[in-house]
Length: 259
Length: 247
Image (cartoon, rainbow over all chains, first blue to last red; front, side, top):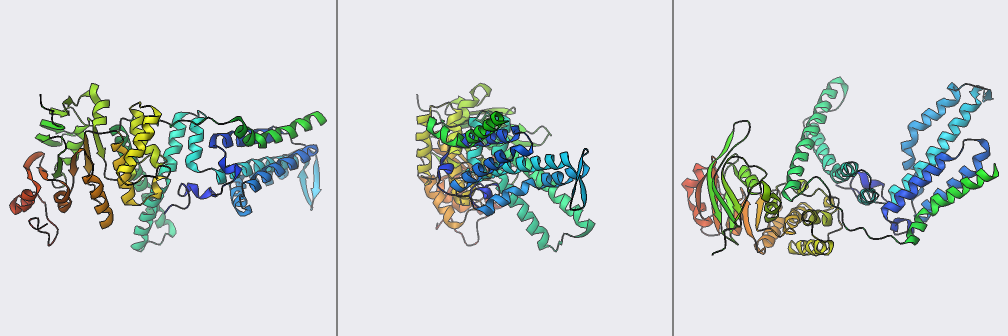
């Protein structure tokens, strides 16, 4: 059944005991979002390449500190692939002065934009991967609740974390039941069967939602998920967590002053 | 004045909005500390009756009161504290990210202060033999453990009546026995809906048979289960080879 913490969702988590893992989820969340904002705010020009290199050193340093394996980081980058495709197209379709690269006529501004896009996306995804590898889904949801993100959004995420495993289990049982009766899953006829499965899964999940609601009402629930006590976070912990975005911001400020 | 019964159901009748009538005048009285099995075939109205006990369903004829408090709209928060329902599928009951937060859900809804919530969570998990599991996500537990945690989620509200819907379903024999040990040790009034007749005999001195929306039998479990004609008339069957007079 569940692989690691949080079932299929929690397979991103790498259990270790490091200073990064010990950061409270909401501190880590703020740190990663702030880091991404600094990265995004950095101008896209060739002169800024050292700043980007500095960001890369910072985020890889954080990954090393958290002892996140390189393979895990690479797998995290997979979500970036659609952006990569888009970035590869940019130099071909963009206008403006052109340069010859390996016999291809490419747009200069397109190349720059593609480089900037790739750099920003890679850095942000790396930071998010470190966050996912060092924080369980349960703690992430709690961190969002603590940061006072919209309650409905947090509840939806919380139920997703709780029930991803249950729904995946149902889907697996339905697949086994299908295949046990000789279903092979090829050709257009198979599509009808798979669509039926999806429909059945939706109805089952909907009915489960109704039963969960009933169970909540029975225990005096009124639509809110009451949070537990929030332990105060000492300033030093905040400083540790925010070291990443603060260093990045320092790089950005240095670049601004130098320009 | 004597203490009121834990649960008093008087002439309860109910039809669903689609016209299907599920209950035709049910009377039931549970004294304090009694453990009673509610038996009956599928479609007898057992679930409909259970959902009336904490006011999820209402609006038909008759009255329900819990330890003297009538089940009506203005009393619902207190009624739902007094009646703890443990539903059949623990995955429906356990919806919070961790066991501890789930057991704390009810007490927090009651507005209890945090130290009291923490004490109740610890005590409830201890009662079901799951102490030390507060930080675990529910899907890391075995089915039997999840069922016991589901019991803890209502125990933490200090209920007057514990209502269990098919508590032994899907449990392996050891899980079934462990749950029985937990349940017999609880100092609460208990109503257990079940098809598992040996389990009813083991845990409940008294049984009530519901069929067609009315109570058709009410007596000591051993006598109810020994009445072969009664069982046959209401689609109840003992497991092969099981003799209630020797158990």
